[in-house]
Length: 500
Image (cartoon, rainbow, N blue to C red):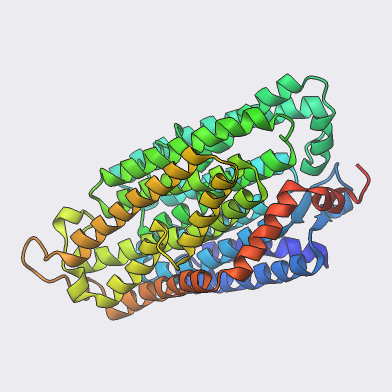
């Protein structure tokens, strides 16, 4: 039964992808994608229930015992990432029904989208380092195809930059896997923990750790490896931008959290000190880049980079409270960032453009959209009592607990600059009159299109409010997840059965 609980969140989107591809030339394809997203969410909730009941669960595929076979494993962090992936997938499937044209659907959009969700979910559940690489490649193929689908010079240019940098990351990652296997003789993450701890050449282990930091850092878009992200995320359909913004970089953050709490813990003073400076520079350069932009999606793209710094900072500080804040921030940001890209897409439906200098008047013509923008925007900036406030509060408090005053100062400064960017969007897109003296209207799209696109925006905004006004259960969950990361004994025992 445990095997099925772990397999189904991966299997369902793959099956939906096959069915959606077979019916891609038929309107049934979008309904298959929507139904698959609903079933994936149900399977993810079943996994979460199992984890809440049992703590850490693991299964060995085809009855090959660990560490020799393929292991799927879920702890609190894995389970919540699978659930939030399914929620984002369902929201995107609904939004896409209003945005994606039939011509693009016939090219296989829904099949690629479901494959991407399966790849992301597999990366969160794998207990094997080589299979993490496999899931990264599934994500890369699907995301590149989604990035360039529909053609166009801008999309192809962005796709080439995106795939080139990610292939470099993959080469570094694979090289690190090979060296790590040479030292430990295993690819199973739980078994690798003891192998790394007992390695004779700890200096080489630290070098390998830095290779993984670079490899995963490219995928997470940390400083100075982030330049592929703002060059690509503003080019595809908004539904694609939203799922990319919500999920793809978070897989890189998750991989960093997993490897640098489970495997690379022998030289924390060196590796995590580097992570602190990388995180601070990521936060600052991202928010400065956002402040310099005037395009709705480019501002949001740079803010992805900025907010990634908060998540890796939780790992870098390496205290229970800091890791708790990192986990909480991870979940909060997926919801908020995907929602802001949804809002940007609907704003374009109304105003016809995303350049803030060329649009305006949305507050008057689309008051509901304006209200729905305020919720994720203020949450991203850290306004109380929305979810972003609690996420930033935990990180800043963790820094102050260990007298990291400069870290706390930069965190607060970046929060203030984030407020500037969000208020700039509000002032230029929503509040000021349209520069051409016209009122934006939704006449460019049928009413059913705007309703389909408003539904996930409202749903994710409601989640942001719920987390913000009732944070205690979510904070407690993040605390347990952080405890499991800092003390992975239950993880190792679940995978290896207590016998390394």
